[in-house]
Length: 330
Image (tube, rainbow, N blue to C red; front, side):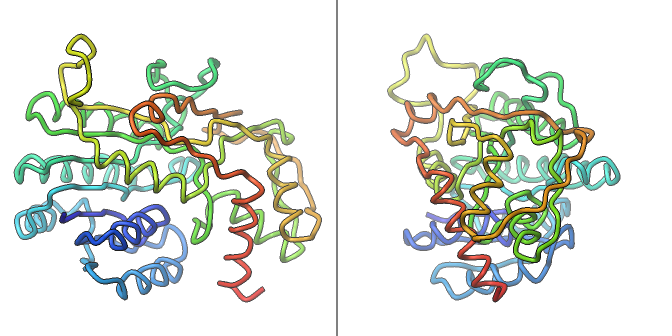
């Protein structure tokens, strides 16, 4: 089939595009290559993609309405995997308009493209951030998510609501995936796994927030990609679904996480084991917009796809550290 992957030079987008090309699909990847984090890393991912049969790259910002309209008209995509976004909780405190442009205007352009060209399935990235300060654990897709604690989280929740409205009005099959702290080779420099590994290898201190009293449902990139690939092949509504269970729109949401939260200090311990070095810890208070824990309920994902993320933290961290040492020559 012919796929559009937005954010193809990004972490998850790169891995998804690779997987689709390996499966023999035609993939058009778009990215604006902004400098939110290292453009060199994005270019390195993109260079590997350019060498893959079936891949074509278009430099494009999803907030460019005319550019997106031309893209959709020119290619007639059968499926869209939308992973481009302005990421980061803390960045949103100082750069709110970046989130409006990418996560709201950009997402609307994607929805309109899918509507105008009758795309068969839109799969898009949401985030565990939508759960906010939810006290009930594990987080399930049916939980209340109406009190986000960051603009980033609010923009991702807005995407879910927008997608549902388009699914209802225009019968566009949409699936939102709430990712939980994704890490692994080619990962993002702004996230804790990368920042901690870099600092530890350089002998610099790491900032440990909330005194280390935090936990995250760390999810290895291969598990995330497997979930995306399986879900994209299951557009709603589902033929095996009883009539009584069907919603008023072909729109669904799933968590993609390991389903096993890890204390932040234990995570640091895994990096120490993989690097063979001790971390110098600086304890800091909780940051604005942050949450004390995340924990994914992945039962609906397992029921629908037969897949349950299973890569252990020790395996995943060892793989990431190995990639980091190789890529940066340390």
